[in-house]
Image (cartoon, rainbow, N blue to C red; front, top):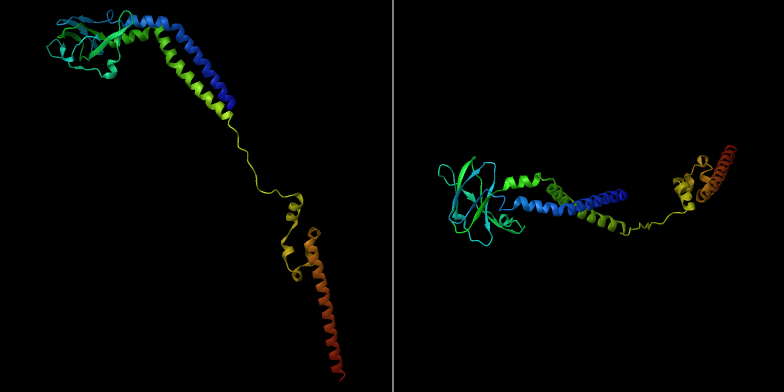
Length: 269
């Protein structure tokens, strides 16, 4: 198990290093292309000075963002989008996170801040009104993102960055876990129970219930050579034999006395 884990750690580490090297190699070129495709001054649909108005073709599948320079004061109610029938299209004010998604200028500086997002209901020509005093630009975010993904250099750079660093972190954490588990002292199992010797096992195996039977009830005819190996049983057998012999002798003496009494009675004594 540990050897298999080490193999996978090496593979992840090697793959992470390769991806990071690819990202480093493509970073400069991809950054230039990203700035080129996201530059607001070159990739806007319409630019309006303060107090101006203009017409722009918008599609229902698009997502349109109005931006202005971060130092300018342009309020949301100063921007209006009207359809061909004169109806105002409602826009959405970006939240704090979306406002942090600033757009670059031609030098790559992030100086354009989103202030309004429009989602039009149908493909048509719309009129954009700028009732403020500062310049604004309207961008098609979906088209810009599509251009970024379609570029091979940018795509390779993004994938290598998004995969290389996380794989490296995973391999590092996994390697530290395996190394710590390897160096962890193993606990020894201590057996406190006393181990029986060969003699004790032999005596326990050859001990039978017969050894606990009182001497007069031991059946001497059923005693085997195996039972004779037990010293206690042998002593019991000898005591039983002596008791039986004494009992037989007393029984014979009793029978003789009875016979003599009958004989004397028969003779008239």
